[in-house]
Image (cartoon, rainbow, N blue to C red):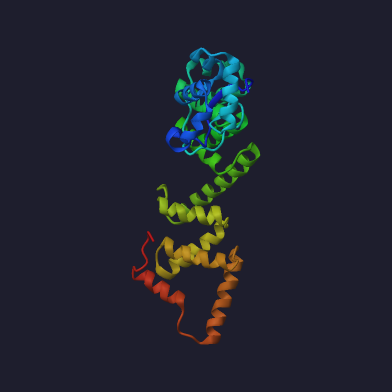
Length: 306
């Protein structure tokens, strides 16, 4: 355990570990060393083993024994192991000495800082370095992974370190843990964004960003369903032809019906529409749920934010 450099509270412990995670009986098994180490790490957040020894004035052997027990009990996790997923995605805090040491002695982190400095075209301040090192050290992301995320954010016009950090956390929470998986993730995101941009132009929305509800629809169509732009365009045209304007709930109903019936191309949609008309003609029925829904939409019974 002494070879593990940094220690932090285990992800399963949480902020109020004494009240919520550790039963009173557990303390009966801990001696002075275990309690001192645990409280030291809790106060510092992430702390080097050597600093624990200096802070507490304890022999290294006693610290190693205490650390082993606390790690086995799931209260601490040791530094160079990959961090577990935690409930709060926040940047860990490092002092200037830690950051300087990482830049000087860790080639991977030095590559991250040089790349980020170049692509952002600015000198990184202490908070910037702290955020990057938190991703690298505390959350265990590879240098290649962090650089890929930084590059992706900048390509979308987002250059703030807080945005980069939150994007990294979102990607991590989605289970993307390798650079290869990140490449696929970014490719899919760019495809969705490209189709959404085309859709805005198609609808005459122009430079206005989609609202969160509108974005929810397009993310489902282009992201979850992975539909082609041409098929979504076909649904848009049908919507406008039938009710005279774009209403996302109405358009969504068309697309959801298509998707449930296996429609994935414009040709599939046209075949289904042709078959539907033939069936209605053969039945000779005047009642059609689509006519009812269209009439309701025209009268304003179907609202945009449904």
